[in-house]
Amino acid sequence: MRFRYLLVFALVLLVALAASGATVNINITDDNCSTFTTSGSGGTVSVTCNGSVTTTTTGSTTTTTLPQPGPFTGACPGFPSTATLNMAAYFKPNSSGGGNQRLNTAGLTSGEVVASFNTGTGTGGGRLAFGEFSANVVPRLVKISKTPCDLTVAPLVTAYGSNSTIYFMVNQTYPGYPTLDANTWYYVSLANVNPDTGVTTCDSTAGPCDVFMELKRP
Image (cartoon, rainbow, N blue to C red):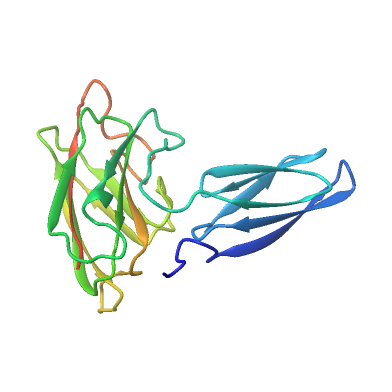
């Protein structure tokens, strides 16, 4: 058995606590800890890794295993609501194919949507289509990332429009197509928002502005 979800990313972070003059060694073990921040002083340090928080006390070394990647069920900061679409029921790890799977939101206005899927073991091309679902046609921002809720400039794939189809490759490269890692969790984050101004393109008076997402993997 391959221990894919055990220790893949190990980081030893040394946090100096000015208030106590001590140094706390925090061992973070998480196979999807791509970003982290630290805060606190006077005996307690909080480490936030991809939205998950753990706490350690001064004078000791604490090893913490943060939640493993998988279907996202949390809430995205900065938005009044979060809708989650779990495509993992069809696109499971350690498998390939799965056909075309289509899910949609209900009552979406100014909230964020996060769809979770695993790329599986297949090699080849895949696609993600999105658009309005029995609702008003508005432009929306869509990003594919290894981190849920990620609408920054960093994600692997970005699209903006009322509807579109994003093509990608899994475990191989092709000119002009983004490449996703095999057997890896990815998150499609979508919001009815203008990326240049940060202003919502759909509010409670104009909504709902529901969307569908249809995914195919190799």
